[in-house]
Every structure is written in C-alpha cells, then in structure tokens.
Image 1 (cartoon, chains in turn cyan, brown):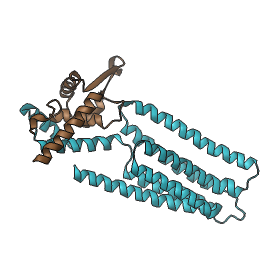
Image 2: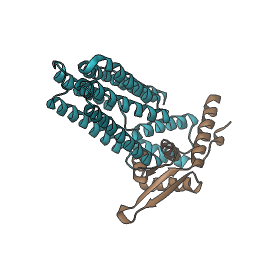
Image 3: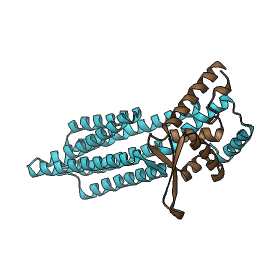
Image 4: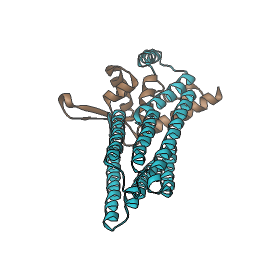
Length: 224
Length: 99
C-alpha cells in the first residue's frame, strides 16, 4: 500500500463523507493483509535462510564424523561452524522479531517472554540429559551422535507445534510436526547418518514451508 | 440493505484502516501511536482526530506512559471496537452479496 496516495485518498473520502462498499471491502482486506504481514516476523526469506542454515550446520558435522571409526563425535571445527550458523539464524530471527513487534505492548509480549524462558529451560534439560548419559557410560555414538541431534530437534519441533496449535497457525503446526518426524526418522540412520539425514530432511521441509508461505501470501494478495 | 446500514464511525477510510490495523493485534495488545502512524501513513494531527472519535465511541482506549520526550502513547481496540468491526464486516459482506 502506498502511504502517500492512500493518505490523499483518505482525506478526499473524509471530506465527501462516503465510501463505496466495494472500495471499503478492498481497503479493509488490504489493510488487514498489510497489518498481519507487518506485525508477523516470519517470512519466506527467513525460512529460506533457515533451510540453508540447517544444511550447512548439519552438513559440517556430518563431514567431520563420516569417516570416524569408532565414532567420537563432531570435531571442534565442525562445532564452530554449527554454532556460528545457528547464531546467525538466531540473530536474524531476533532482528526480524524486534522489527515486527516494534511499538507492540501487552499480553502477547509477556506470553512470548514466558515461552522463550520455557524453551531455554527445555534445551538446557536436553544438554543436561546428554551430560547424564555420558556420565552413566553411554557410548559416544549415542551421546554425541544420535541423542543430541535427535533430542534437540524433537524438543524444538514439539515446542513450536504446541505454540502453533494454540495460535491456530496450521502451516506452522505442519512445519513443526514435519521437523519432529524428520528428527525421529533420522535417529535410525545411526550416529553418522543422523547428521546428514537431519540436514537434508530439515532443508527440504523448510524449503517446502518457504514455498507454501510465498504461495499463501500471493493467494491472499490476489484475494484482497 | 443500503450503505446507511454500515457503522458510520468505521465507514471512513482512515478510521477503517485504524480499526483493521488494531484488530490484527492479539486481544489485550496495544500499538504505539508512532508505529500506528507509520503503518497507516496519516499525519499525526489527522490520526489524533480519528483516534479521538473512535475513543469517544469506546471503540478503542489510549494510554500514555512516561513523561516528556520519553512519553509514549499506546492505543488498543476494545471489545466493543472489535465487535463493531465484526458487525461492519458482516454488513459489508451482505451488501456486496446483494450487489
């Protein structure tokens, strides 16, 4: 929506005191669509970036472990790459979220803070359990392979699925459940294969989600 | 059904945009004056005039926090305002179906 031309139109209509029903319906649909887009931090570009992050992060770890016999776990370089790209992903999401939610206050802001705290605790618990498994003598293949790759994604996916269900965000729910399924299925690929399977699986799921987002946006634009 | 059946308070482009934008927020959330102005593209004076009319009708509430340059005004749609937009949308749909 072009602010300048709309402002001019608004003032003209105000002066005339009338608005054609078709014009009103069009303006209402356009405004609702624009507001929803501007207040939502998600976008198909962010999903594309997430797909690239998944491929690079898990791919780097897979490259570092694929020749290990016996399995020892990701190398330091692979972990640096993994955490660096994950950090880039977190920073872009935080930036997009702050931009979308600028000027917004109220109940949803405190709800999101509580959700973030719950997610952090859940992720810390995943790593605490990893420490416990290592302490109890579980093999490196389980602790630094199958468990950490699978449990992290299952926790993230389940958390986002519950959040999406509460908000009736059906595409988000579909994405989260697909992530959980990819993680659970990849666990059967073993300590080396789990990283490749997770990386490729997540990349495909996120690319599909990005395409769906772009399609839904185009459909709602043409409906408006 | 005629155009007169539409809520005259909402059936003005600027106010329709204000109400529709605030309705995109979850229940219980408010939007700062500057962000609303940025999203709709009205001048501050024009926006204040329309907000006042909607507030007088109890369609929205405004709250000012802080003092001086750090002060911030937030506006939120009331239940009455949300219901009025729902009724307006229904009436508009009925009108368009009859055309």
